[in-house]
Image 1 (tube, rainbow, N blue to C red):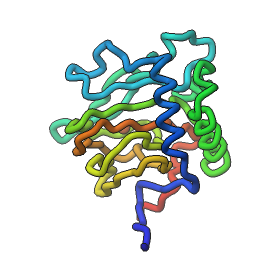
Image 2: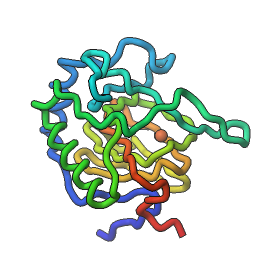
Image 3: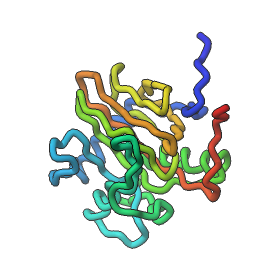
Amino acid sequence: MEHKVYRYFQKLPFVFDPNKLERALDQVLEIAPWPQQLINVDKKYQQICLTRKKGQKAPDCYYEGNGGVYHVFVDGKEENRQQDLDEGEYSEFISEFNHTYFKEVYDEINNYCKKEYNGVLGRVRLMLSKPRASLSWHRDPEPRLHVPIVTSFGAMMIVEDEVLHMKTGEAWFADTEYYHSQFNGSEVDRIHIVASLVTSCSSCSIVNKE
Ligand SMILES: [Fe+2]
């Protein structure tokens, strides 16, 4: 079947083992459960960090990298939200998770990003989205890479006018410097690895938008 050509998404040329991803998720949750403090009032979204700033100690590092700056479109104009942070500081994979498959996933994606995008990974997070939850219409300071661990058709990412369901184990570049959102229209939790891509130039977008 012919693959659709995307402007804001690019499929990376490797696939991760879905069973190993689920096992790694269980291993991480044994060490760092989903945070109990409220990320969103309705707890529709929760995050666990797989990378940290140098010197950060467990267990704080599992949750410290949550949030970040983003730009949201409100009443016809853009507003900045949340605290500023330096993605480049979050370059250390948390050693407490070194025994999990996520370390392999991290190394493979990080090496690929060095070669293909002249960039490195900043924050790498597990992101949980509950059924029938959506994000705001916003844009981020950097692109993101996604690896779905648990998902079901009906969980969709939207960038500008493109919509994509990412399958378990696939790896995708998403140009989240453009306006985007996500909704989980499925009946199950959606859990992705979401990695920020830090490049030396802000216009290293790999996709031709013309
Ligand atoms: Fe985003």
